[in-house]
Image 1 (tube, rainbow, N blue to C red):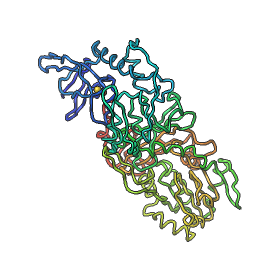
Image 2 (image 1 turned 135 degrees about the horizontal axis):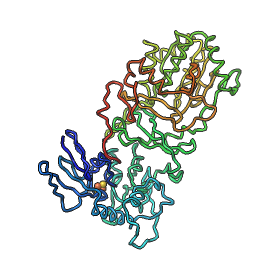
Image 3 (image 1 turned 60 degrees about the vertical axis):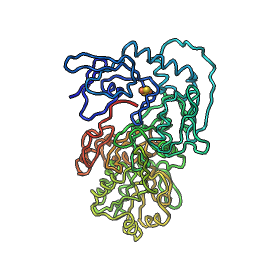
Image 4 (image 1 turned 120 degrees about the vertical axis):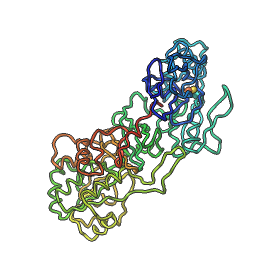
Length: 543
Ligand code: FES
């Protein structure tokens, strides 16, 4: 097996593997500071922060020959016998000089900069910079430029060029460019071509300093107040891995979570800026009983006691599962309804779609299917009701009054049902609707329950490529809301707190499609068709 040596530590190179110095060092547990390199972009080697000593070790004699000059690790291919030295005096001096040079032109405005607390320039200065500033400190200017979707704080830019390469290589929109040269260089756009594309928010994540600012997040929170939870974007069937960042149960920002099998390092603007629905004042709240034109707020425990009797008395039952439910929620809902009525009809509600899939040069796909879990929910429904009717057929049957009781387990984020379809459902003697927002069907329901939004839910989703991923709850739902998972858990008479992990194990044991989900689910999720974990092992290196 070919070997390389980083600061005296030996690493093995897998056959056909192409690593650069930064990635190889990361494998040895050594961080090489860098600004311009990013694993998802081409290598330009312009910032020089990653300079290291490079040499070759002769396999037979063990003799090491070092190059006289420092080399950028990002642009150094690692081969059998490559030697890197990252901890020498020479390297430390080079890093300190790069930091000093960048800080000559960088305003020290960390106290008002959105990036403070997660700024590479700040972190590297403390780690690799020098304690003393030799240049005269000039008052900084605060030149800003509106680039379109984001704001550029011109003086903070370190000209790493990541944002420019992103628009050329990943979004393919090429709005960003570098104007002027040398010390006068700046990022800009053409006056008639502002930065405006469905992936534009990623340039803010790529910016290692506070130069590119997110207009949505600007001055809203200091980043050290935010807590992050791993989540899954529920706004399309790509199912991007995300971080949900919140403070005191309020979501402030969504960031991409690296997942080579799904979204790599990126997310689209719809997912990034879609979080306000969590705190939308129009959301349904609590549990209400409606009848005779009035809506009466109901204690959740009273609801849990009286609803099973009412459904049993209603006659033939039906359950509508929305493609926004988690696998666990859909499974518990089916289990419960079939416990009340073994012949209950189960169908999957409408699948929202918009146009065609959008594909980008970097490989990113925004799915036309605007829901996170169609495949998962369809598999659950098919397990409990093989050869069940389609939603359209089921709706016809509802209109003919075939069902005595209907439970709609919704969670749709946009309007999904019209008055005509709602009127068909109202033929049932008892209509229970659990949803995020009011709709024609909730307006005419006997019981209305508020559903949980994506950040308030814990559970699994299966994306359009059969990858199951698990999301953690980031914020608590409003106090009087009854999320579907805990509600069905309680209705089934299960003891203790709702445990989605246990439910998923049950699903994996019972339904062949989910059998790969029987063990621990890794951060990158699992492919339910074939176990391809080896293919998507996290890449070495950091962003
Ligand atoms: Fe290597 Fe910039 S020169 S990261």
